[in-house]
Length: 197
Image (tube, rainbow, N blue to C red):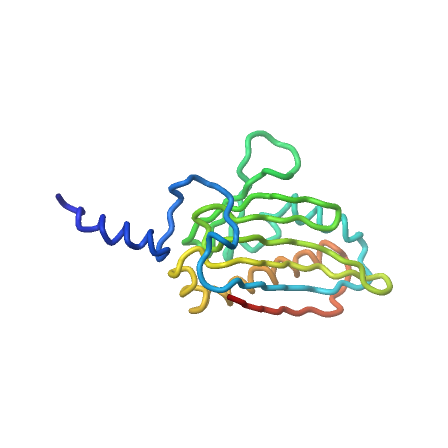
């Protein structure tokens, strides 16, 4: 009989998307599975006079993602059987801020980009893409684009109360580490956030 009183509030929380748990396993999630507004965040850094080409830096980011993101903010760990390079279908567990676990899956890889899609129980539902594009002269831009909705109303509240700032620090730190890998110098950087219903 102990703990039965938790059943009704837990079921209600799940039904209203206040709380989400992976009842359907670790399936891919998109914006349609989230709640609240769609949020598109873009973080970028312009690199001048790089020693390594943009395709090499993007490949390095994918193959060394756990080392490229500060673990105190988001500890990435690849989950797969066997060795070999990271590719489409591979998954990462992410320990966010040392308290929240999530998973993402590599769904697309190209010479100048790769995309990760969230899996159930991640705090967001949608995708994150790392990409590069050439600029004038011997320079290029590295960009992280995130287009997601919160997975639950609780996750939306935590984002508004400060997790969004920590998320920004995570991706900007990753871009600064990519700058070091490139061997170039920073020519500019920025971030934008847009939300729509």
